[in-house]
Every structure is written in C-alpha cells, then in structure tokens.
Amino acid sequence: MVLLKSIPKLDKFIKNKDFEPYSNKLLTKIAKKTINELRESILKNECSEINEEVLVQKTIKEYKNLTNASLRTLINATGVIVHTNLGRSLISENTFEKVKNIVCSYNNLEYDVKNGHRGERYTHISKIICELLGCEDVLIVNNNASAVFLILNTFAKDKEVIVSRGELVEIGGSFRVPEVMKQSGAILKEVGATNKTHLYDYIDNINENTSMLMKVHKSNYSIEGFTSEISNEELVTLASEKDLIDYYDMGSGHLVDLPYNLDLAEPSVLKLMKNKPSLLSFSGDKLLGSVQAGIIVGKKELIQKLKKNQLLRMLRVDKITLAILEENIKSILIDKKEEIPTLNMLFTSTDILEKRALYVQDQLKDLAQTEVLKTQTVIGGGTTPNKKIPSIALSLSFKNYKENKIEKLLRAAGIIGRIENDHFLLDFRAIKENELDTLINIIKKVINE
Image (tube, rainbow, N blue to C red; front, side):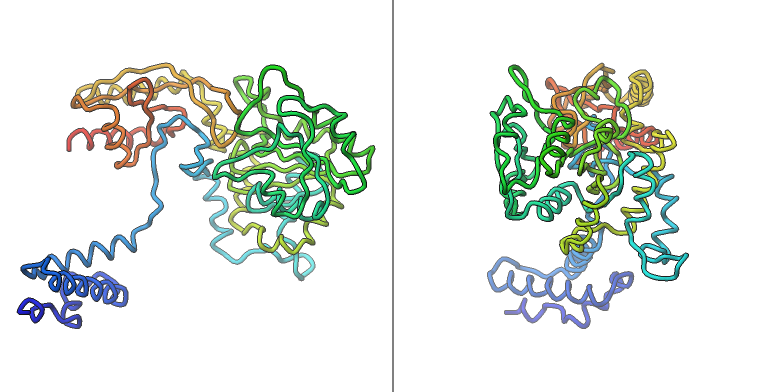
C-alpha cells in the first residue's frame, strides 16, 4: 500500500511544466485517466514502482493521439487514379484557391442579391451544367446513391420499376440496387436474363402499376460472350410511348472523350443527353474528377418534383461542394481539363511518366535496386470495368527485404504502392509531379533508418 500513497495528486500532477503547451481542460481529463490506470495496476500487483516522468509522457502521448488529425496526406503509388480508399478524385490547389474566399466568407448560397430575398442553392450551378449538357434542369445531392434513392422514392414509391436482371449492381460496401429500391419504397420488377435482355422483356412487363423504366450502368463488372441489352435511346423511346419515366443510373459518367478507347466501356453523359432522357444521374467524384456528389439532370418538371421531396433536406450539398463542382464544370466547359487532376493524370502520356520514373530512379541509384517497367493499371472508382490503361512503374528493392516488408515500411511512411509478380512497384500514373521529391526523400529516410 506504500505505492498507493505515492501516487501523484491530480491537482499537483497537471501543474508539471511539460504540460504548459496543452489545453488544461482536456489534459486534466486524460491525466485523471492515467492516474486511475496506475492505481488499478498497483492493486493488481502489476506495478512495482512509480515514475512520474513516465506518467507525464504517457499523458502527453494520449493527448496528442486525441488531438492530432486522423486524416493525413498519402502518396498514391498504386496506379489507380480514382482510388476509393484514398479519397477518389483530387481537387487542384488552383481550384481550391478560387473557392476559398467564397467558403471562408458569408455568401449568396440561398440569397437572391438582385431581388433581396431568399434564393435557391441549386441555381448557382444549374446554368453552367445546363449549358454543357443541354438539359432542362439540374439537382445536386450528396452522392449518386442518394440520387438513386431520391428519384425512386419520389416517382416510384409503392409502384413498379422495371430493371434488367443483368443490371442489378452491387457496389462497394455491399450496397445493392435491389436493396436501395426496397428502402426507397419502389417495387423491383426484374426482366430478361442475366446475359440477355430484350426490348420485349420491358414491353411485356409494363402494367398499370409501372412507374419507371430504369437502366443501371454496370460500373464494376462486365458481361461478355452471348449477351445483349437495350440501349438508353430505346429505353427513352419506349418510356415516352408508354407515358412512363425513363431513368439511367450512370454511376460514373464522364463529360470528356476518354483516351485508350475507354469510351467503348463507359458511356458519355454528353452523348446520352442527346436522347433527351427523363432523368439521368452520375457521380461528381469519379470520371468527372470533382467532389463527392450525385448529379441529377433531366426534365424540369421532374427535377422540380424532386426538389419538393422532404428527403432532399437530408441529401442536399453544402457551399463547399457547390463551389468546387462549379469550378470543375467550368473547366470542362472551356476545355481546360488539365485543371482537373483526375483527367490530367488519365491523359498524361507514358513518355512523361517514364521521365518521372527515371528521375526517381537516378536519385535512388546508390541506395536501392530499381528497374523502370512498362505496366498496366485501372482507373478505379467503379469505372470502366475490366479495362486497363498503360502506365510506368518503378520496381523497388533494398536491404534484401522481401516485397511485403518494403510495402509495409513505405505504407507506414505515407507511400501506398502495390505488389505485382513478387515485386514492390511504385506506379507513376497517380503520382503528382510535385510529389516526386517528397517521394524520394521518404524512401531515402526509410532506407537509412
């Protein structure tokens, strides 16, 4: 019990000079916990001495663990441009600077300056998107899953929605189209077979309770071989003839012509809008290369009904999303796709990537075994399923470590690479040019530790 009497008193303990830089309120809470843990350890005969300096450092460590930001920057050397686990699309510093003044100030998010009364937040972006896509109206929600849910809940609650059996998609996190439809109140009507769906499959299943003909883009898989599906144009025409709503859940629609013949795998929003669909939705943070958002475009009367759904209050986006999205759409409208990092990375030639890899190789020549390799990667983010694009990678080895250990060491230091054919690779497709020296310095530090 002598040790128990030696436990520091809380009021005196927190006056230690090493605690001066820290918040007294939070520090007191942590210190109390630290002292209580010490008391429990003594009572269990797990502690034979008290070192106050150790207690101080333990308290400071816990303080820093709580107050240090959990989110941190990483270097994406996986080659996957739209990496869902690494934050998907990047926002350029130039774009961020343009919107910084808006989001750091009071602004006209929902205020009509001209007429001096309340305005609507969606008007700020509808004009530029309507100009780009030729649509009647636009609505922005917090992601494309929200767009799907809102559309189904608004127009198909307790009514049937016809969908091809081959398009009942499951995206990341086990979110499935049938389950989203069920939660929205819509009734799923599967038609066709897994590999083949014909126009007559839709026609034969239309009845008095049918509300919508829905098409879902196969964003993360493909069906090959003996297959067929109806086009969006056919769906739009049929819906018009039957006085129904047609809706295309595109998932990861793009607004520019893609390289490497990727347009064959991923439909273009611009081309599909020529069919004048009732409703169409796609993601803001995938091939568009902007912030997380669900972009709904289509007929004005339908968009207006979506805006009146009370669920929109829970799904709407804030000023930061709208400001950045507007800037990125503007870049596409004026043909400056290089201002959007996702598109800039996608269009960077392998010759440029090779020069960057050679530069890094030269800086590491005395420290590691390296080899510049031609490789392939994917765009990621549930886009262009099973389609690969060319890239350049640097095979990296040092200290006779196995590739798994190298991967672990660099991952801990903030570099996320990949292992391929028993080699650790740094793929340069998604490494920004201004990250090269940082990449080199981190690798050197890891090697020299």
